[in-house]
Length: 197
Image 1 (cartoon, rainbow, N blue to C red):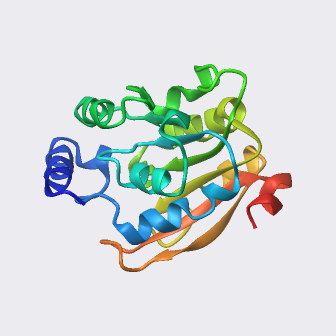
Image 2: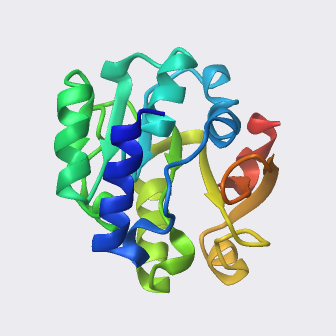
C-alpha cells in the first residue's frame, strides 16, 4: 500500500470519521478475502466505497478488467484520485443509497458481484436499507453476490432487513491480519446462495 494512499485515507478519516469508518485502508489479507470468489462469477463488478482503491487493486489482480468496474465513491477527494488512477473504470461520485434510482451501470448487463467497503455499522439504518435494496433490485443480476466486510462481531445487516428483502448472509471468513481484524459476509437472495458456495 503506497504511503500516499495511507495518508490520504487518514486525512479523509479526520474530515469524516463516521463516513470513513476506519483509520487505515483495507489490508492485503482482507482485500484477498473480499475478492476471492469474484473470478468465478464472470461479469462486471461494482465496488461501493473504494476509498484509495485497496479492494480495487485486488479486483484487478483477480482478473476483473478495469473497464468492467464501476466504482461508487461519495468522497470527492477519493473519487478524483480514482479517476486519475483508473481512467477506464466507471466512477460515480454519489451516495450508494442512490443506486436504486440509477439505471444498470453496465447498460443491458447487470453486475455479477458488488464488493462493499462501506462502514454500514456507522450509517443510519434507512441508508443501509436503501443501499442494499438498490443493489439487489437494480444493479445485481440473478445469482449475483454482495460481499461486505465488518469489524463487528456479526453480520452488519440486521436480521429484520435480510428477512424483509428475502436475503441471507453467510460468513465467508476472517482476515485476522487486517488492522483491525475483519470478517467478510456474502449476502444473496435466498434462492441464490448455492451459487457462491
